[in-house]
Length: 357
Image 1 (cartoon, one colour):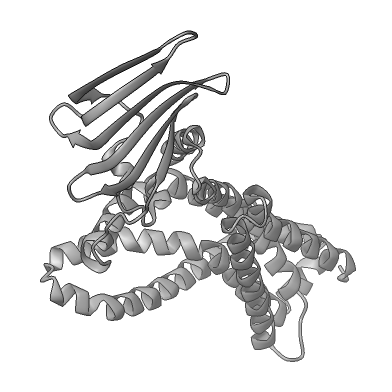
Image 2: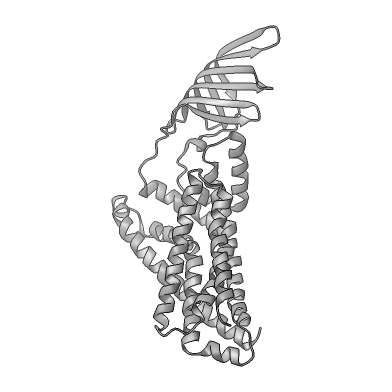
């Protein structure tokens, strides 16, 4: 690494950490102001509040990393341009690509750290953060869905008319098993109750029908223990649940939800795709920031920074809209999450090709 790389990287990382610090401070102050009434109402101790923000701050850092990296790049590059340092660098025989390379190397470091944090470290912290918000910030959760269906095995399905998540009891339960699209057995029970000791379900007042080629076998009883690919956590509050999974846990959960034929599987796929796309977003925005702020402007540094903010907010709006379309099923989640990167990648290439070097 030569002197130029070290010089630019030092300025880039210093500015990046400063911008991240300012953004985090603003977000934490606003968040504390909004939640302070809840803290007082629930008589939460200072240690619990500090532990909450210990988990909350890395979460915020993860959210703002792409934009703060972009803003830091625009600011540093604009300063270099206004002090004619870029002209001096080019006059010394260095190419414009060597300047981009310095920022690119810094963006690679941030992208790798971001991927590791988002994939494994922050999800562990989010478990405590989300649990705290569910307990003290959000209203009590009641499972209110009616006529719930689960695919519990390849050819088995569970139906519940309703479920009480506080008592962990389901009502009017039906278990159906199919073979080659033909019903082979059907079990009905008035109640299904979770036994915390045995970690199994108990069926109350059940009737079973097994269909054979030439006959039907009917059995019944008052109580029956059974093991299902469903547990009470599936009826709990799923508020920000996807953010509490590590990459490995997220993959397993997506496979499980796919087996069940769950309707909300796209939410977890979107979370997974975002974690893979964000490192590339950081790299892309850093390169774009160098390109748009490298030309000396008569309007001064403020104009270049304002131009950078315009691109940043345009990216945020585009990403939010694309994610919303993915969540409501209008666009394939994988395509929707990568679309902002593809669009702004194309913009970056076009601007780079047209700019004088």
